[in-house]
Image (cartoon, rainbow, N blue to C red; front, side, top):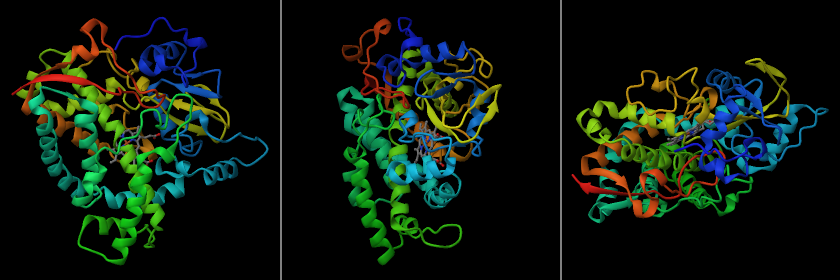
Length: 427
Ligand code: HEM
């Protein structure tokens, strides 16, 4: 994607401006030119583009709270320097259900949710789930292969990601049909430009209700299945979590593991279409596919930005953060920091340090689904390349090479497209 040169970034609000959501890298370079940590001058936000500085913040749970990961600066909390910080954070969290998800929790609450999560994403489950990925990838490709074209987002990415997570957490096979098509409205996702999003309209609410039923049922009538083991998973002290806690973690997995992974698939197919010879090289050297997935995660910046809330005055990278500030950790910019990556704006399949990227974050909240997402990316590329060739953009939809057109997610956290039509020949 090319950089926007016509925007006056100094006067433009990243939290409302579609042009930056559509092309964030021009904005990130504008920030980087001022330093690795820069106050934005509005909404009490400090933006980070430096790799080392961002990693130091990711790892500092003492001075930075995760309460604003989902809301960014639209956190319903007006910091009052005369009241204890923890009390303000706790009462804000108590009033807003979506601030209680694992990604926004701090220390002890987070530890409890993590215990439930550890019961879901086990090595044995991951292994079984990978076998299912191959099966489901082929089933989904069968649905469009005769058409010679497909929309990566809805025809491949969403059903694949939805069914894989459903299998991972043990949604019974007969109920998986209802999971398909459970995608959120692109205008109602966390990180929505302007801040407003309506979780009650999110299909995950329906998933939550379904899961509540599973927990009650499997606790009363245990069976020998994945779902029963998940519903019976205990905290580290041996106590059984309340049903709502299990539902919250399981439902969060559906949300966290969907749009991100879908956009990873779309990004990888853009790279395949834009780099002649790449398809053939990956077919000839399949051992390079994992590196391809990681370089796509690095350069395409699906998880564009996440947030932390400053608890205490602290100095990092020469910058002093003040309590109540929002830190915008621009992952996509950290992944293109020239101090870390040589020729950072170029796609390079042979990049030696590609695995150091922070697309999955770092520290306490580092992505629990990272290994799963990497496996999904690898299996998807393996199966798509086994069955499709000459993968190219549908130029009737997206225009010619020098003037591509996409509708982008109107989002300041997640970068991606609303649809992406590709054409292909059968292998
Ligand atoms: C390409 C795909 C994905 C990307 C780029 C991605 C990225 C991220 C990032 C950056 C974070 C940390 C945010 C922060 O610290 O503020 C995160 C957290 C998380 N992700 Fe992912 N993710 C992906 C796929 C998945 C999948 C497939 C799952 C689940 C099956 C998942 C589950 C989670 C969970 C549970 C957390 C919260 C962890 C915690 O707070 O302890 N993610 N993800």
